[in-house]
Image (cartoon, rainbow, N blue to C red):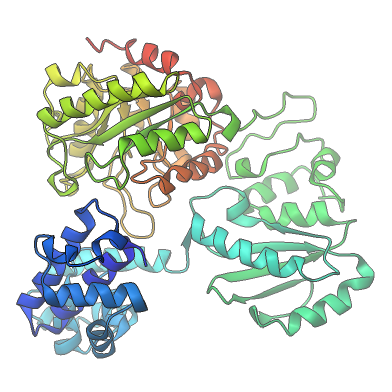
Length: 558
């Protein structure tokens, strides 16, 4: 079991104890132990040797026992006892912003609310108005939060959906009748979250009957409907699936219909009858249209004819030369600066942009000015021994509520690049947050705006901003806005790519990696960038280090 997984179990136990309200001291002890274990840089397997865990501040004998048991069994006895005592639906209540363990306990014990459905009924019937601590503003916040959660409940992040895609593809290809398997819908279009998996399987007409018989008996999929050429069901992973049967003669047509989007299908249907064809190219050509890459098949796309220039090529992994926005053990990263650099070299990158947190991010062990200097010394040493690979001295500097930066200009001036991000004070109005971002973008030492809305997909809506104002401000000041590739962020939202590119705003693909394994999150960014598509000349990740630094110095940094 990984350290992160054990930390999650300790934190869960602490929350369960808080919900039960029976042992506040023990709840706090386990919460503190989870934080301490997460911040320790020593690998878990080393901590488990001898009595090293007891040397970690805040970890006592009872916590050590829980950690050791978790490492061996994947759980610990006290956690299982607490899980059995708290209905799972009560924990789901705490997905609502502002609804913590104490309020969850009050809803459960005093109002018999044990699920989100129960809460919705209580909100509609006014039950909560009689409970102490549940005023009008709180109730309205829950109502808004519940609406958001209900919209997100059936959706999944891209990596989760792609895991199910892999399992399903492996299963389908094990059936000898199937010639090819294609996953379409929002997954193929590169959307940030996925509702269900739209799958097209291709087989010769004469084998469809036997194929359907085999699929009917599948232990992998619970079928809900098996009528016609489109079946619906639920995969063993929990994701819903819509399955279309195709032959080599109509595969292209089926792929277009299954990929969508609905507005795109309506648009091409307005040009004439969709042909039955074996390839998508033939379908578009039959309508006099240029082939539209799947990520661009959204509403509002201007269709091009076969006589127009084709759509721009999407950026690929081969185009990328460096990665910016990476964290190390200097702040809240899990791997050292050297290990991150050496991993990048193994993957044939030319440069790495380090961007650990600034001092305000105490929760992330943010760097003080003195520790910044220590990091710079190590970067200079590593650059001397790892050349021609280069490590760039960057920082993810917090934007204060008034738009000022967490570090003063004298220090910011000496970084190779500066990413400005918001990590606190999310409750401001749209005008206030927008003013805050624009003031940061106007700072001559800021180069890139990080995760502009602060959203966490399926968990938290971003703080409200006026995108048009922010983009215009970035363009006027010659600044970049990142596409944060963390699958929980994917922010800048792709719906603003077209406007950003129109304004010639550079958009780096930044994984915001806190570990070696998270460097692969760049793949999420590549998939989403195709929805622009973001061109090489406006993607700093595809520039050389010298080109990037020259650009950084082009907007009055000094």
